[in-house]
Length: 145
Image 1 (tube, one colour):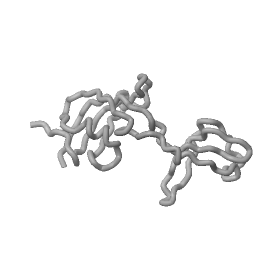
Image 2: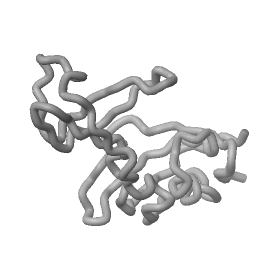
Image 3: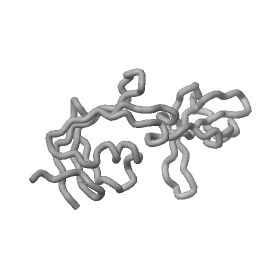
Image 4: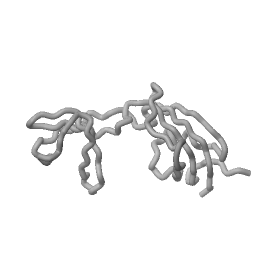
């Protein structure tokens, strides 16, 4: 009997991720499949829930609601940073992704929303926050824990 995906399963899969309007965000369909362990915290809840119970050879398209994908944008994650905190060589533009170190020295990406000579407004929300997503998946391999 084929292994069924459950918490702790190691899963190899192909996927595509689209916004609700059909715009492609990410895909492995043309390349190397992704591997992950269910329950390791690397995938948002809604993605893992949609995989539970699937087995090798199965395909599924699931709509992941905003609250189970990357959540709603948090206004507290938009920071106003003094312009002087950026090097003079940094050519700022709206949409530019900049990286900072958090308290644990992990890399934290943010997107420049606006700037002037004094302040740079940087959005640290996940770029997919506020969106429900279409998750298309093809299961290639399942190994039970």
